[in-house]
Length: 334
Image 1: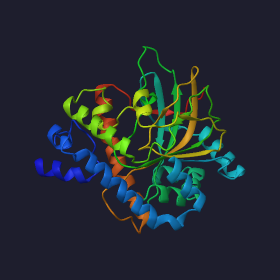
Image 2: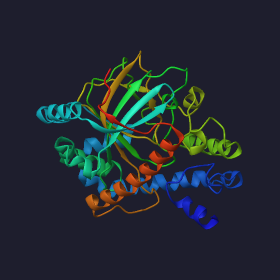
Image 3: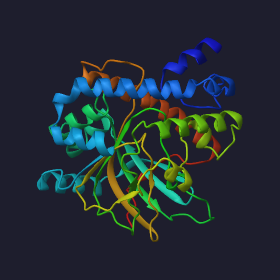
Image 4: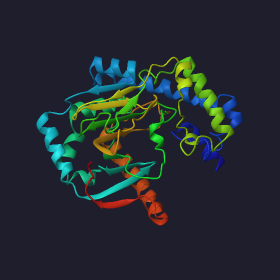
């Protein structure tokens, strides 16, 4: 397996435990992790430069400056109302995930699923959204689309939701976005993001170096998320890097929030039992490919097929272990 593990260094693989090359203390002491971070960020900016004609100047400036974009009243009102009605009436397979005391219901909007959901299909082809996501991903590829219903404080037991710790998803820039079907406020837990934390400053590089050594030295450090390259941020870390306080994205329904999740972010805590529904989009690709696809729709279908197969394997394992999995029904709203 060694040749494959070495080759994985030049992919999006980020696990310090599952890949002994990426998780090598010696190699990271010599700068392997930092090398991957620097090259991935440089190629990301190069691809963004090539794709810059796709979106307005102000959107590019905000994304590069702050690491996120917020657009209220994003969809035409009639289209938004029709989309909300379609999702309110949905009944079928729903994937259920538990993280701490948070339960999340998701529906992967594949090509086959969208054929029976015309408003979701219409959204995936909405030109303004399509161009914005293809640009910010830097790969000219439409993202994965999901319906996501996040239910906070849905379970007892005192378990902690790991998504509520400020963290970075991975070592390379990548994008997640939400179009909210509900108003988002303190009651149902807004998305939290530290502005400008996506920037690759000297202080950030030193922090990445230190964290790579900690993860390499102790593969169990910080629980299941830490060893997977999703580093957590402490208040002391934030102050040392000179980062501002987090911004809580309290926004009305029909708002698009798009973020580079290499920046520090988390799921804000809710005041009590609550839910919020959104169309959730995720764009992640090999960060070391210097080019972007000239065939966005065809490439998206290939990635969708591969990811669907991956999810089916996960669902099978979950079913065998009696854990979370697939159920049938409607989205539960609180």
